[in-house]
Length: 198
Image: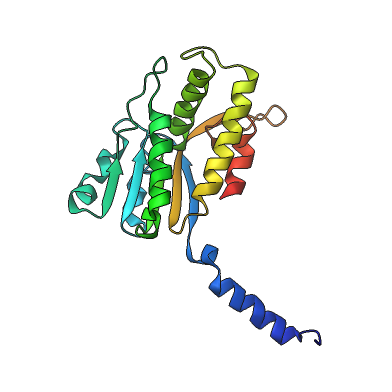
């Protein structure tokens, strides 16, 4: 078979891109301070929107859209007790069931609100599974959390719908320049690595 001409190769690239499921969806990580409109911007997403809410009361700004039915909210993950954690395990079961049922084929956008409090719930569950609920995290716990976050976000970004994660902002001071730098409020090196997953 002779090699493809540049025009044929370009046509093949266009065809592959247009037929790819990944080119039909959108993924975004939106982070900022409290009250900056991270959750409120979900009203502009492709409908219907499913929001798994981990921020207590965070979806109240979407009440009109929730009442109208264009945004669905599961706020059962908002209540968490570090000594008796339930939120992350409940979310994991819920998310797996929705994936298995094909539910994400029927929504326009799926949102984790917020990734910061979702990750805190995850760490609570990791400590519980290690037999130290409500205890002080150890180095290995942070490693398990970072790997679990990475794997879960990779699953979310390959869903057949748009995926948006909101997160709170964390400020650090650059030790060389003295500048204050904002980033995603998550564990360790994920502050730099997490945005790459989107």
